[in-house]
Image (cartoon, rainbow, N blue to C red; front, side, top):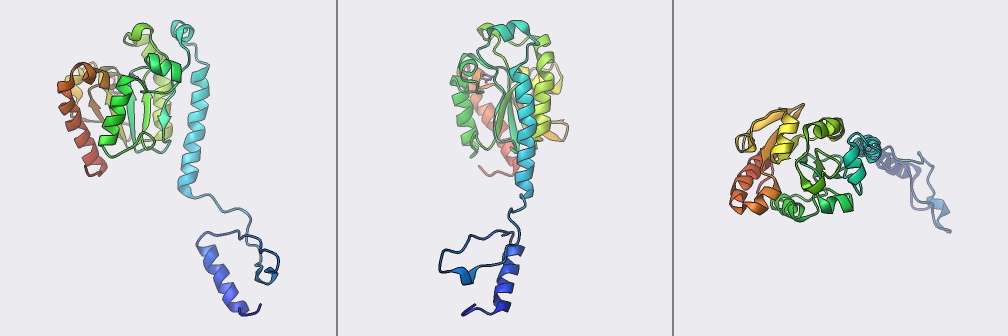
Length: 240
Ligand code: URA
């Protein structure tokens, strides 16, 4: 105990324990005198980590169901893979798209084709990253020839995207395009009338905007999407 009083060591241990440190490295040989009584072997998980793990587990259960889903037999036959969603299970904002295209069907990841690259740019212009948000689609299988999802297909997939949103519990949902907006809000109003307004879905604030594929065909609409993103970022408290 040379150089240290028992009282000083006790105080040091108490302050480490108060800071959440419950395990200390073993002393190297020759340092045995600095050895400390063990407090506990494993640090208790922090609440945020617990929340993330719980959401990840819930998403994993749904992901497995989706991977085996054959509710829409023709889509299940033609798909290469299901496209579940990607991003942070604790995201504050989810971006909801329509359905996988050819690139997504091959990769298993949402929004990785041309429209996806544009969505990535939009997210980054909002000073966010794809890893911070969560991206999912209404349909988990690619409709042949990229046709619009049929009402029966949306009904079959509703339970999956609703449960994903329930597991993530985002504060905000941004619907990309008509299919996502109408499916989530259960409305038939066109996207031109839905965009730029606030809705709710459970506890989440919902905003709708044009789909990135529409922007590829109509670049002039990008300014409307940017207006919608500014509304979203302002409500999220993110300065642009
Ligand atoms: N369009 C979508 O709606 N979703 C994707 O994942 C890709 C393109």
